[in-house]
Amino acid sequence: MSYYDIDDILADSQKLPCKFSITIPGLGYLNGEPGCPIKENVRLELPIWLAEILAICSISNSSDYEENDEYRETTFLKLLEPEFFSPVFLNFIKSDALRLNLNPYMFYYRIVTKWSNMFGDAELVELISKALVDRASELNDLSFKLNDHFRGGNLEFMNNLDSYEKQLFKNSHKSYKDLKIWWLKKPN
Image (cartoon, helix red, strand yellow):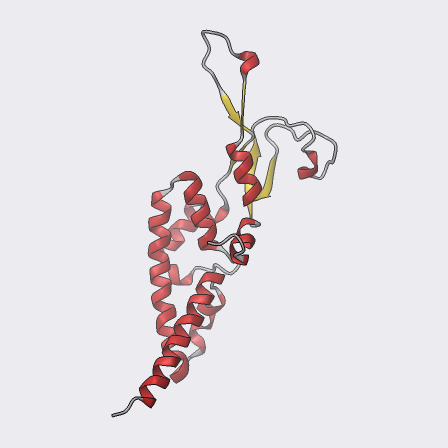
């Protein structure tokens, strides 16, 4: 992914649910209260780029530290599991990935990539990879059939694609179209 990749920039702006671990002075503008502190246990939805930074940044409790105590570091916030990674949503993906509506999450695969990089969730990556392969196979079939006899029965599936899948469909359709042109021009 490139620094100037607009899809990556838009994916970074998608919001994730978060819960603040500590009270932070002056950050109230995130909660719509400029000049006020943001309180501990406040839940907000923050863009991925900001949530990731605040989830990594930590503060040590050095004032509470004594020789016998453990040295503790607390991150500013904890990322909460978004609804599109909930067990119900993931079970739906396992049952029928083709019926999944990814349209509300326009950058679903990029968000999964970012989430997996932050948390090292191999099980999620495996599940989403399998779903992508299933959906890509269906997209490939539809892009082949588009020139011949595309039926509206698959229209619901087409409306439920995320941005990556839409681009995949366009590329696949263009390949079949170019192949057909080449085949017709090929000398016998």
